[in-house]
Image 1: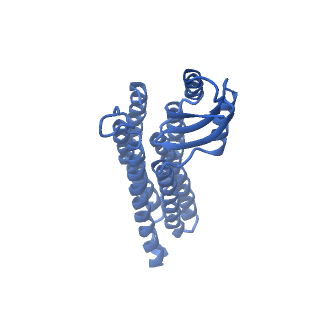
Image 2: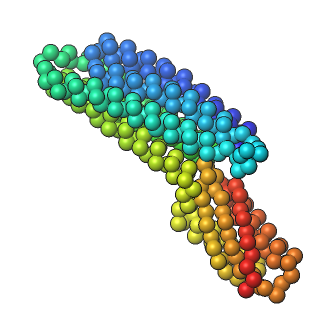
Length: 291
């Protein structure tokens, strides 16, 4: 990972932290003033985004370290570790919100609930707009620099926007004679947060356990290899995702009557072609079989 990768990721993360701090403070105040449990729950979700972004920043910094004697393949998987920690924190936050909502609903004393004010609805609208904008902003740069941790943070923003939609619905229902809906909205927010944490966790684990690339990518590599001069067939193609990079193990067949230098040149040509066509590929091992 180059300096440009880290610089871009850090800049996006700093902007994210500032926006989330301001937004969470605004939502807490609105939730307290307007007597909305859903808005306070939503504020907790936004506050958790600050911690998640810090974790992403640490993970990206560690993942950007150069290879060394103890880690000859680099440190890319530290991004996955950061994403797993982020997913765990998200899940705990969501379950905490859900527990509070269930206890309120189970109490059943809806008549004593204070109706949320319009300030809470306004805060929810502001949150939806801001968090959706942050999602697209973070997603753009995550795709640009190919960062899994930054993409996870982007989807964290999207889940926050969705939770604000739930909060808004709950607030509006509560103001129209259904006060329990404010707590129901908090419960929906819990489900959304837990779902987001599961998706992030699963993606990170897939990258930690050497999961193969998708079939389309492998087929594209296979077609490219077969187009190279001197390649008679592909005997073996194996890929594995390593953090946000890909490793390729390849066996090809070439004319057995050719000299070692000639077959070596074929293997080098295949290696260079894959490296040029697939920027995510970090390491390629090419073995040439005689045919």
